Figure (tube, helix red, strand yellow):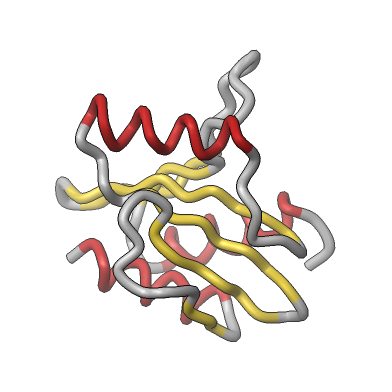
Length: 116
């Protein structure tokens, strides 16, 4: 994977294979909003995708804080693809440190387990 869009596409395909709705969020003029929305059976999450970094921009951290504090949304994840490995964690209330998965399917399964 060479771009953030590649990471997004891999996750969309993987979530959809597992029967989840997974859509890219495109909100013109809104820099920092999470990249993906996933949902199924009343459960949902937002996912911010990164490539070759685990750092969130200030605007991304701010939007995560708004979602968490104003709307009580806790399931906001950051996913980064670094050195052919997916790294992921909760943004708002990290239960653990960074976890690693080798494939988009493994990552998707781990996120789904957090949601059910």
